[in-house]
Structure formats: structure tokens, C-alpha cells
Length: 80
Image (cartoon, rainbow, N blue to C red):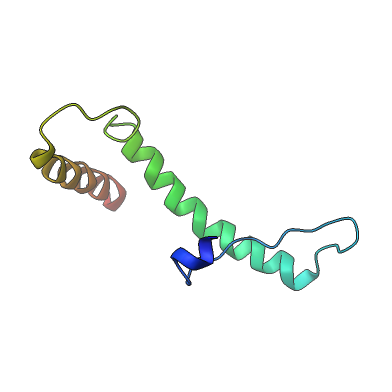
């Protein structure tokens, strides 16, 4: 299903009882997870500001401004 939406999306290879993972599949899964964890950490930092983790109840036209400000603050923290 994900391939239909975004053809560049990479998902980990899963194993089964009949077909265990090869060394190449394990290395691919490790590469995917090392990239994904960086993105997930940023999502966690954004959720700390409660703009994604709760319902946004303010004016919709100001959402982009507030989101850009929060992302700027997070980028500034990561640069230090």
C-alpha cells in the first residue's frame, strides 16, 4: 500500500519461519532504521511543543507560522 503513495519509501524486510533474513537484508534493515531514528527524534521534539500531539484549536491561518517558528527553534537547538 505504501508503494502506491510514495514509490521512494523504504520499509524493512521481514523474516518468517520458512525464510530467515540474509546478511544483506539485515544490513538494509539497519541502514533504514538508522535513517528513520533521526526523523523520529525530530518528531518527538516537535511533539514536545504540543502542536502535533494535541488538537490544534487556534486559527488555521496561523498554524504554518507557529509550525515554522517551532521548527526554527528546534533547528537552533540542534545547531548548538
